[in-house]
Length: 629
Figure 1 (cartoon, rainbow, N blue to C red):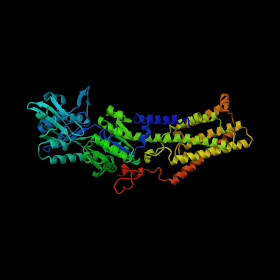
Figure 2: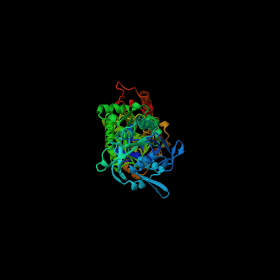
Figure 3: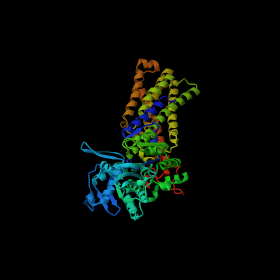
Figure 4: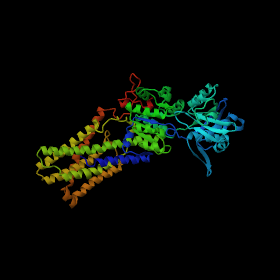
């Protein structure tokens, strides 16, 4: 049993945790480190994760047909309203004034000037509406003084609208904002078909579209229910720019064989426009709405998850159902979320990823990972570090198991051959805890091999001891034990004492470990292609292990405890030459493996779907890469 294995594995995961933290990924559960590197699908929110979550109102389309442009960037209300390219005085357009009034009254955010700058608090959509209203000349405090609020219907994803009730000179009025199709259904019959067409066109240009309306609300003020008989005021188009680096991150997912999909409450056309810009969806049939998901069986959901890449107007319950369907389909799913309603989906996912800035405490408690900057690119960085962590776990296990197996074979062969004990128990302990122990911990610091995001995801159910690991362990153990046993037998037949033979054999084993650590740096690449200076911790750790054994051979205390003594330079050189046999054997095995598995490290390909139109989920290589859609 390799005594250093638990320590080395814990160190490998802890190092990966530290590396992830430097790249904006905070690990709450250690097992999630390599789990993120195993994911085959990332189901991401749009707002705040793929985009900056800094909405800006750019277009206003009034119900009379007037189109108004709004200038300025971000939440600071610096800018103006333009009609046909010329500044527009709000007093010239009463319909714009009415729309601005709804924007500030049906609102839960705050926007204030403080210490020479603007500060805000609340939902980004509400803050963007307040910024637009400021440019028109309305502010929330003044509007509430004139129209005190008496009740409200808060926004919920299932409702797709929010409403507030306010007193005015004529009684109580209700002000509504929400999805265009929902608000239109509450309005008095009229020519609203063109308005919905305009909303569709605005969404197609990448805008997030809200409809605003108002009407009498006296009968509903005491017991709020869905308003009706409202007057439509117009549409507001907001733009939320993509986060820097997200396009590159999505492309990296494509190379890594990870399916990216978007789950959002936005309009399907808006969501598709963003997905097209990012490159993971292009056609309308890759978009599914929450209404279409209603009533689907689990089998139908699995089929939808295999083909669709954008899920729009989705309720939290449906997000949970999609995650469960993806898992049933064989995916290892990482899901992002920030709200209380996202907690069930985060718990159901293989890896729950909560937002650090915009996320709620409930979401963070339900997640395994927290993204400190809420950026999708950080998730991809975490995937890379997770794959590196898993590689290093495999490297450490291979080093310890192969050398441990070789020691077992050596001792077993000596016992069955009626030979003296080749190594004393204290010498075996020295090898496992000190010389090998220093190197296996140092191996946990190994950096990325540079191609981890160009490999297929490993099958979620694949064991650590897959065929490659077993083959390499057997080859290395057989070669090392054979050379060790042959040397020990030769030394005894040459007339060496048992003490001298053990002393020389112990040095030979230490040198084999020193050479074999290079073989462990990559499962498929030749050690000659990996510079020793790219991993200074491993280089100095290996040299330290060798120096420690050299010192023990010359110190009286070490000589007395381990039964060792100095040897000649010639013996050192001969033993080093023998130790190179394991290097040659592993180079031959890596060459043989590459010949037998020429596509082992190739990037994933988009194989043809089966008769149902969905990929063969059991084969991870058949999952469609986003870049291939």
